[in-house]
Image 1 (cartoon, rainbow, N blue to C red):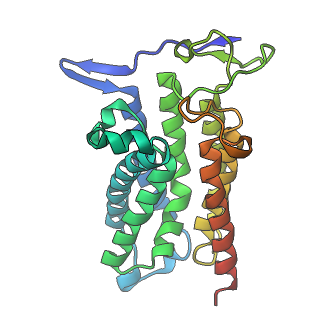
Image 2: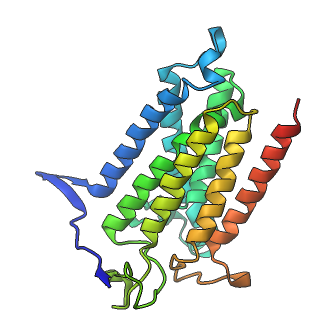
Length: 268
């Protein structure tokens, strides 16, 4: 049985300025996105595009800026709608209290979709082509976020068997019983493994929309699996059919991914 290490959430203190580890993981995610985005431009069909259809570093930077806005706004609004609609309906001003925590990946993903629709229209580029470009660059950012969750000792897993060698006690979980370090599971599944599979899949020419579809299916499946080990939100618990809210939100993702892949395959 392991004990979650006590890590100061502040990585560096410069007078009144406190730099948190969680903020550094976000910076790492942004840096990885820029690096991988530029590498993606070497893949087809982007590498062979010329003239008005050509892609540049500025395009990647603009996609990142709009994506960050979409993640923050969509993640916060999605959390309020999906997880605590009644509470925030009664306290609407607290929607703005982002420092209190509360972000939803699925809401953030919807925010990114909207932001990239804006980018595609203003740059006159096919929206699905934009999404295919960025899809393989996303999992490393998710992995960085899970590192931040682990450092903060948050979003821990369900109770595990005392015999589990990597079972971990999280001091803030309200019990000294070992739990699954679900942040690590998600780091490995939704982060590293999904990145490797998507990157290899996207290196070869695919029909427009199929890389995005692979991301939807891959993330949905891996997150669904990880939710079996992640502690459900205490104000929601286990929902219908013994599934968590995260699992219910993954089902339409997988269905949409399967439909999109089949649509792209049949499209001329």
